Structure formats: C-alpha cells, structure tokens
Image 1: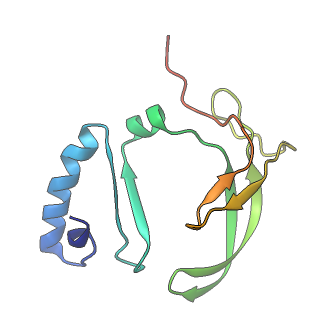
Image 2 (image 1 turned 180 degrees about the horizontal axis):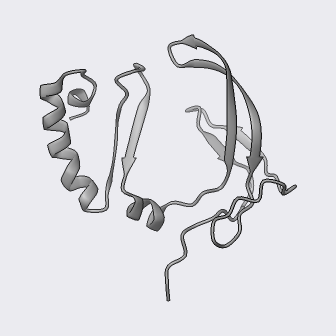
Length: 123
C-alpha cells in the first residue's frame, strides 16, 4: 500500500483515500511515504487517537532562513518550551529544559524522564 501512496496520480488518490478512511475512523493511524521528498515519511492520525495515545513533550517555533531543495533547510529556533499547564497552555517563558540526543535512526531521544502534556480524560 505504501507504493500506492508515493505516486502523484489522482486515480490512485481514490484508492489510498478509500483505504485510509476506515483506518482513521477506527482510531488508528497511517505512516506513508512522502510524495514531495523521496525518503520522507508522513503520518496521519485522528485527533481523538492523538489525544488518547500521544504526549506532547516539547514545542518549537522555527524560522526557515534558507531552503536548498530536497528537504534541506537552515532553521533557527524562535521559541522553545517543554513546560505546559494542565489545560495544554504552553509556558513559553519557562526555564525548564531537558537533554536530547539523536538515535542511530536520526530521531530524537530524551535523556531523562520528563512529564509532557496529554489531554486529560474527563472523570
């Protein structure tokens, strides 16, 4: 199915949309290849599934200063926070920080236990 997602073809869009609809409606998600950038990945998940299964551990506001093509950018961080109110409000002026390192796969790993923000279930 991933091969179907990687084409710029309106006819194939109908097939992938038909596949994605029940997956997302059943609270699951999809990862599929980027059409724009070979080797890139996209993720799609419903808001309800995100709220139930994900935790926000940090947020950044970035400024793109240069684009070189092929998904390569120069960026600067304008704002950063890893501190949130219980309702999800971002505490931009917080001094709270944590250490990150990259894994062998290029993704970030947080070096200590931190508590992020999750949508709290109503009692």
